[in-house]
Amino acid sequence: MKRAMTALALLAVCLLARADGSNWRFFAGLGIANGGESISSGTITNVSTGLQTPYDVRTGTGLQYRLGTDYRIAGRLTLQGSIGYSANDPMGNNGSLTFTTIPVEILGFVNLTEALRVGGGVRSTSAEMKGSGVSSGMSVIGTYASTVGTVAEAQYLFPLPNSTPGYQNSRFGVSLRYVTESFTHNSQTYNGNHVELGMALYY
Image 1: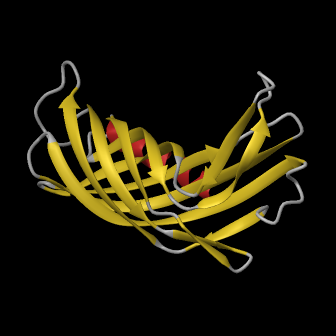
Image 2: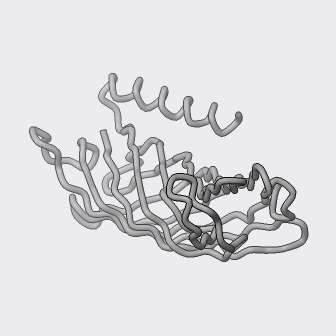
C-alpha cells in the first residue's frame, strides 16, 4: 500500500509540474530481465495444452514494469524516482506459483549528449512468493527480505515528433541496465543480480 501511494504521489507531482512548464517529466518503462538465482524449479502440466513442461522461478527473470518521474537538477544532471512491478508465475492444472517484486528506485543520470545518458543509484525491493493448489504448502511460499540494491543504467533517447531540442523534452528510448541485490527467506539467501534490456517513454 505504501508503494502504491508513493507511485500516485510521484505521478501527481509530475503532472502538476508539467502543467507549470518545470523541469519534471513523467516516464513509463518496460523491460525484459534475465538472471538471478532459482527459487523453485520442476515440471508442471500446462493449463491450456495439458503438456508437461519444465519451469524455473528465478529472482531476476521476467517482464519488468516501471512508472516514475524525472527531474532536471541542473544542466546535464537529472534525478529519477520510480516504482516497478514484476511477476514470474508458472501455472499448472493442479497448482501455481507467483513470485512478485515491487522495487522502488532513486537514480541519478548524466546526459553525455542529447541522446545518450548514463547513471546509477539504489533500489529497495519488496518480494513475495504465493502458491495455490499443490504448491500452497511449499517451503518457498512467503515474503522475501531484500538488501539495498544498486543499479547501473545506460539510455539512448530519440526525440518524439514535433519536439524541440532540450534534455527535458518528450522522448522515447532504449535502455540497458544491471541490477545487484539479494533476497532472504527462511534463512536462505538468493542472488538477485540481473541484466535488463528495456524501453522507456518520457513525457
